[in-house]
Image 1 (cartoon, rainbow, N blue to C red):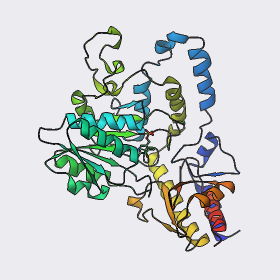
Image 2 (image 1 turned 30 degrees about the horizontal axis):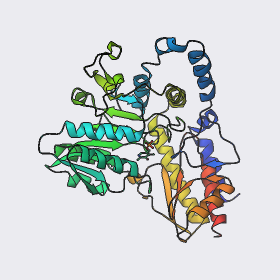
Image 3 (image 1 turned 135 degrees about the vertical axis):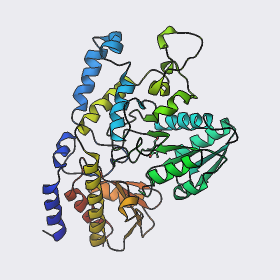
Image 4 (image 1 turned 30 degrees about the vertical axis):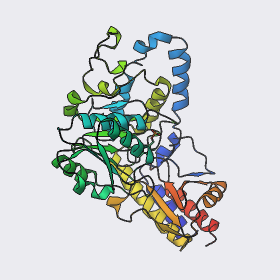
Length: 397
Ligand SMILES: *Cc1c(COP(=O)(O)O)cnc(C)c1O
């Protein structure tokens, strides 16, 4: 055994989250490092989903809206996500996609901005959908949009700024942005901030309430393992809820949805973020998937994530010297839960295809970034060592 393999074995043996892996459907032949794109399947989900389909839908049919508590599932599941992102109950609702929730949050943020604020600032390296949606939201609300590097947003927010939309972790590089500092600066400038937590929810502690975040959105199919296309979430801080003027005021957000009145009257609280009939099958699959988080301390998740990514970087330096350059920051305070490597050859897709063929699953952001996501609930140190070793074999180092 090499030093790194024995170190990996020792670290796995000492890992307090080690038992969590058995709660997922995984096979020993594959190192799955793509949980930042699609989380692995929690074992409890298939049986729960079968029960939802066969009993709740099949036998109870329409009664399930009440008897199986389908109607209130968006808020109930929202509160479960809330615990994982530092939000007290009543502020998070689950539903729709992240893209749709970005739209709701940005337009609502502009609508509650003071007069004369007509500028939307967007993280220049944002995941594309956020930028596309923000551009449309700005156009619809008569604002102009400006792209600014995430690290400069705190300084860029000024008297004309209505809202700042920023990704907590850069999906490409894995860089973690300063949520407390940027939030404080944007609020001090009199503007609102919308954080996109797609790559931080379930990967590290996010303290939305503690840092006074205005709005947040995120998806649940990455580190939260909710399944393909699982409903996203929307956080609206409690004191902003009365002013939350949804651009998509569907009947599910009405104060009396079954009153079927012609006039719209918004519900109070997180419910106001709902739009139409909830996606019950995927919402309840997500509900079951969230059981793996019961009793899990996000601080332990973060500690393991940093240990894993540090260890992977050391293994890569040992096994594939010169073949790749990390673009993920070395500083812990600036790193999410993924490692992105730029290839020296400038080629990415062929390399990753070969890695996948050899049982190491990551993904590529073209042309030359290899991404490896470390989901601390089910990835171990032996996985990290093996992934780096296979990478070394593939690049012929
Ligand atoms: C994954 C991701 C999305 C995905 O949006 P969908 O509407 O679910 O397709 C959006 N924003 C960021 C930052 C992401 O990482």
